[in-house]
Length: 356
Image (cartoon, rainbow, N blue to C red; front, side, top):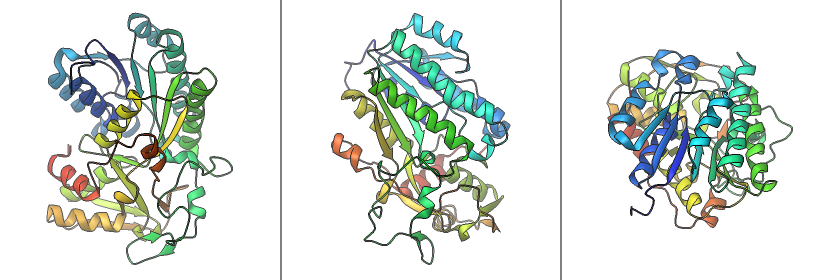
């Protein structure tokens, strides 16, 4: 990691969150000056056990004078503009969001103003003051709504699965429609942001990328009941607390990507940027699990029995099976590859995860 990146500046929103904090450490190691925006909205969304204060403390201790914190809300366009006027950024990584579909239904206006309007304020400031920069947005596979649930799934002993000859067997690619399905309120606000980031690339000709993530995870996750499936599941089993499986008999499948692998993908894009590109990104066939399979693995690693409760009712719009096809990104960036798989992720969170 050479010193060629000295004097370069990166702005990271949601800098105390899972992907934000991983990005801060990654780019600080490359010599970037890190500007972080985070006002611990996670505590407001999910209660004090989901607060990211611990993560911000860690960042400040580890990165010291390489990290400059801005305790502002991305809905505050005036304060955002002040930061942009004072700094010319080389890279903007926008991870700040209201991340839960259950929560979004309680306060749709809060959800939309953070996810959609906050993104637009950032894009406008990027266009006016740092238009040579690269803008990276963490979108979500929820932009596809519940369309994946129309796939012809087969029920196996521990998971749902697609027939091997199905076109999406190796994962869902960017050709899936984002239209005409139920997205959840959260999914809709992210669609608005996702398309807007594409437009600033395609219409204004700026360097932007949209990463539609599967389950993003890693030890820096403040796992909460409504968000952060693996981290929360491990936290429950580790502390002997009850975990409720919502519907699908626990056979719903998720692909999990480690935060390091995702941020490394950001770095590859930054080095060779394109305009308004969309990428599905997740654990893919390389790293995926059903809830039942995850529970069994975590029980082995922790040597504890999980306390599981079943609810027949699945969460509205929840994916029954979702695996990302990452081949478009790999074709554009052949040097990028996974460092972590599902078992490694589980072991790492069990060992060093954040259980308050």
